[in-house]
Image 1: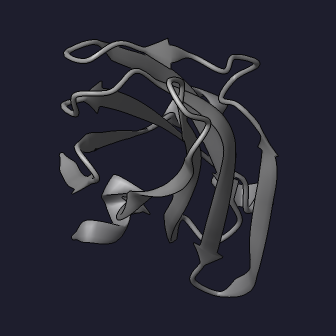
Image 2: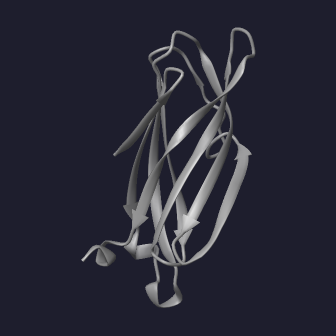
Length: 128
């Protein structure tokens, strides 16, 4: 598990290779990642947007931007957390992701970025 804390918001990431949805012969490798967002601050916050930098070892890098996460813009009171699962396709079977969330303090509308720590995705048979 990879974690990072920014302004009292802790982000934890776990990844898993999805062999049943992958097709190595067609250079199609599917990974899922589970993210837990924990509000350890004293303020109620809302997640507004996300930005991802995705690196595929032997292929071009890409960026993804969008509103919320998996169709939601969760509001978290102090001490609450939000967990979701999403996925990423790679062509090489090895890559990494990192990014940031745009958060907003509900009480005053102040917006700030929260780092999503860099994490790797590697097909198990490439680890031998």
